[in-house]
Length: 98
Image (cartoon, rainbow, N blue to C red; front, top):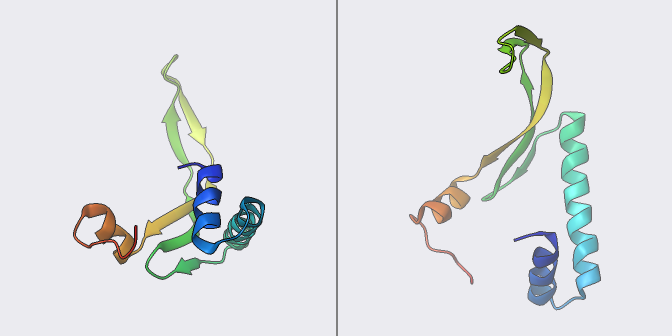
């Protein structure tokens, strides 16, 4: 499912226009991204948690030359699925709708 398909599904569920659904989706995603960029944890109960994780500096290897290269430390987005989401995906729980 891509963003347009998600907007169509949200519009149908809430009986709103596709444009309104896209605005709502964009707002939710923007708020999640900005919170994670600031270092805040965004926890959506039943769905999962978004947070900023740090990756330590490490040595890597250039696959063409075999030379060792230093990979600097960086921050990356991290998502951990919630228990309900995991249960639905694994088939251990039944979906409440659709």
